Structure formats: C-alpha cells, structure tokens
Length: 435
Image (tube, rainbow, N blue to C red):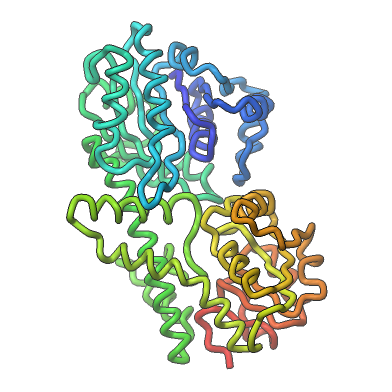
C-alpha cells in the first residue's frame, strides 16, 4: 500500500520504517527541512537501536521510504495518512496544537482528492479527541463526511524506547479503533503481515483509552516497585529478592517490576498527567494515579538520600553523573530522573561532571532551558569519574559495568541489576540495605 506518516519524530520515524520494512511505499512528512534532508540520506534524527541500518536499507537501497515537506502531495500520493505528531504536556493536559495543524492540512488536501482516504490518529490523545477535534477539523476543511468520503481510525502505538524497531516490526498487539467497516478493512490490509490473534477491534474512543490504560498501569507498576524498594531499604530487606519473587508469579510477571530513581521519558509522565486531569474534569478521579505522580516526582531524592546516609552532606562536592537518558539505549532525556538529580546538586553548590553514551546533547539543551549551565559534559565515563568525590549512576547503561570496578570513591547506583553491591566495598544501590 501507499502510506504517509505525518510527523517525523520518534513515533513517525520508527513506524514509517516498520511499514516500509513490510513492503509498503512510505512517505514521511515534516515541516523541518533539516529533518527531511537527513531522512532522505537515510540518517535518523533520533537514536534508536537498529533504526539507522534499517533506514539506510529502505531509503538508499530499496527506495521504499522518502521524506517530504509537502503534506498535500503526500496525502494525494497515498491511501492512508497516519498522524504522528507530538502531544506535549501543557500544565497537566496535552497540547493539541500540532494535531489541529495537521488535521487542518490533511482536510485541505482531502478536499481536492477523489479517492477514499483513511486518516489514522497514532499520536497519543485523550479519549474523545479523535472524534471531537480531529474529525471535526477534517470534515470542516475537506467539506467531506467521515465514513463516507474518508475513513477515520485510532491506532495507538506501544513502542518501548530502546527496542522500538523490534516493537514496530513484531508488536505484541495491534489496536484498531474504527467506526465503519471500509476503514477497518483497509487498516487490516495495512497490517496484512500480522496474524489475526494480534488484533483488538474497538471503537475510536476506546482505542484512545486503551493507550492511556496501558501506560498508566505500567507507570503504576514501576511506582509499586519503587515504594516496596523504599520500604525494604528501611526494613533492612533486599528489595531485589522481594521483587523477583513476586515477579515470578505469572499473574504479575517481572516486566516493569524493577525499582530505581523513578520513571521518565516522553510517554509515562505526560500520559499519566493527562489522564489524571481528564479524570478530574469528568469528576471521576484516578486516585491511584494521582499518588503515582506524587511518588514518582520525589523518587529521585532516594538516590541522593542514600548518598548522604553513607558519606554525609554532598553539598559543594565534586560529583560524577553517569547516565543522563531516562533509560538505557535511548538518547531521550525528557523527564529523566538524572536531570532532576542534577538540578538538585546544582542547588547544593556541587561541581558536576556528566557523561551519557547517547543523551548528552538533549540533556544539555534541556538543562540550559532551565538555566542550568554549571554542568561539565565529558567525552567518556573515565573523564567523568576523574577527581570525583562521589559518583551517581541513575541510568543503568550496560557499558557502565566496565567502569564501576575502576571507581574508588563512593558510588551510588539507581538500579541494582547493573552490578551486585556485595562485590564492591564502595558501591551502594537503591533498595539494597548494604551496611
């Protein structure tokens, strides 16, 4: 099929590559000329494992994927358009300005298109947005009717940063929210490579809700693990033993049941905030999720508290920070606990050196937006720990296992799975009561 993806951010690039991998002719649309130019050279503008190699094959060899600035041309040249633009946090709500802009643009393009065209919302939007905002604008600017002249679908993405290419090519599930059979049939053809057991067919608003329900549950599970780890630490219990034992129960599973300095990234913080706000507006509050947000907001402080428990005040100390991205194998530092830790250390007059395998550029940009310019960004982990009085490792990049044996100063890690503190006299971990 011929498919256009509107918005070449994280969701757009990965899903466009996945669609082209399965033989579709794909056009990726963006308003940024630099992004378009980079993508047409097969170079992604984000870091995601396996993405660059896949783009090189699809763009340069097979020539089944290209990027453009021309939204109207892309809509006219394809059968399906997927909206993949961001819906950033806006005071607890989501900012729909990008969604609205794209819906208007697609609507204008549909006005002069004769063939039936399916518009798919893949961006994360609160229940009711696709019908009450996207569809309204599409009909207004096209002069056409959904379900008759064009189709509308909600097809949420469930990508995990770090393994997103694999998730796109081999998804656990595919949710299709539609309101007419023709659109449903076309979308099933788009995913012709997937077995029927992967599909969940629901209404459009239910599909929007499923995305939030999944993300909020996973955020709750992470927070549950963190709360138990905090208790275990206070009670002199090894949290890893407790969490691994309950994770072995198939009703619970070990996925996302791991303690650390808190969740971050582009999805969980924004999505949980948005659905909490939606619940309040509808007078049906998510009390559990309200507490999840509150707990996660201060979880990073436990790593700082652990350090101060062991070595006393860390004010005005020389600190090495290893890991800036919110999780390994991604350059995404949005809502990263590491940046919260740095903000706190700066307020304490600490001298900070930081290193991350991929997150340096975004971290620097985000911290400078907060007027935090006191951080020294190093080119290697070795440079980062040199002359440090203590080291904090909030993000468990596997490559840090090699540097930990070389660190002689007190070291505090957010994830016990990185190393076993018992093997080192100077290493301490959250949820592990090493005395």
